[in-house]
Image (cartoon, rainbow, N blue to C red; front, side, top):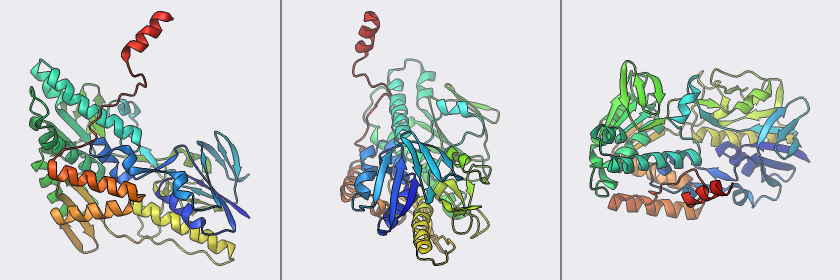
Length: 427
């Protein structure tokens, strides 16, 4: 029986495992350092206090439980040895006949890694809850501040990066400040919150049609978001940012400007691009190692259009299934197929009742686009319970302008500060 190891429980890994689970002639081991599959497209909604983490995540074990030939390992992979065909993890080594790498990507700060402390990215649940904490804490600090300059600083939010994540995050903060929090504070007026979306390029959402990107800009401005294009961030610290020659004081800076593939790709001993993505062959295998495949954000597949495919969920989902099917063809002594991405379009939401959708020649925005966005995201959520919870929360937020996950959760695990003081006194 062939041994197949999958590294990563994202869209590519999960879909590859499900497809391979139908083939009883293989034994599949999926390894991930987290025990859950995360629906990343809605992560910004957790950061903006619209959803709770449990509503966009599901345990990997429960997702793959129907497949008796698939086992799940909760561990961290540290290296891959393609010569020995082994994967080194925190719980030991695993041998493979076929390996599928689907480790995703992390935020890149273009050589300024110290910026991460001041401007967290949005790739994990931990980052989403930290961003939520910073946003809500900023309003609390503004309510208590006596100095007008401090109030202004706390009520200034900067989002760096004008792609879909940055646009959706800026729009969500604008909506929260103007509607959700407007009646919750008595000293400050949350509607006066200043939100700046900074993009180095000439326009936001540069992968969209120009008319749709312009519409998104207007929608953001209606929510009080200032869109700064052709602007370059040169410094970020705990006091704010420097943009070109201008200094902006802000308590909260968020990063959505760039990504770098998971560093585990460095252990594959194969060619990578400048963003750390592994250059893959037409069948998604790597050069000189036809039994090793790379998918999703970790892969650079340029054979279809000449440009790498975007790092979006549909690409990873289709690639995961395709790799599993090609392995099945190998086992039947059939020739492999070449991967071809079926582009169903792209979409981005700006706020309540505002979104843009582009699919082929069809391009539209507004309320209908927003409803389309809602339906598609609910459809792709994992599990009936999650779909119902998200649908209820979105309906509640739409009708009442309220958000139900406005919890400030500190990184510290201690319940009461005095516990720490007592321990210090004892020691």
